[in-house]
Image (tube, rainbow, N blue to C red; front, top):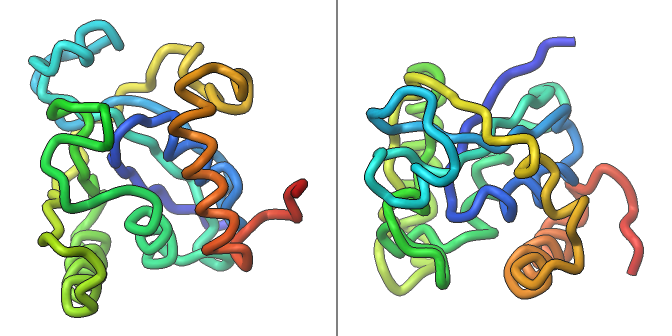
Length: 182
């Protein structure tokens, strides 16, 4: 199987991971950190906002089943790409909206998707999602992996993650791996 990687930042990685785990063609999703200047950062350092890293997910996907562009459309559909360094109550550069491209083709595709979305005037404000070359991916601590799946009744998961998953299931039902319980 020919797989590719996509690396995205759109607020809390728990939200993104929970959604992309359900996308048909996605083989795996790992939460982590990218885009900073500190080697081997940990969650407590990331939370200070001083390392320059963003909370990200790295998606291993089969492009024969789901395209990079389709992943980007889901990404833009489940977070607010118009708020600088913020998603809801999560504030700081670690929560920025960013696409960490792996190669020039991904960069060009991301630029095109952003341009297309801007012309559709979906949001009242312009898209502030940054395009950053992925230099280094640091996997997050084990307890962050599959966080929503393991902690669905935790307060943040109920208030923030679950609504994003529900929104994805409604808006992108054709992209679901399988039917989800009602």
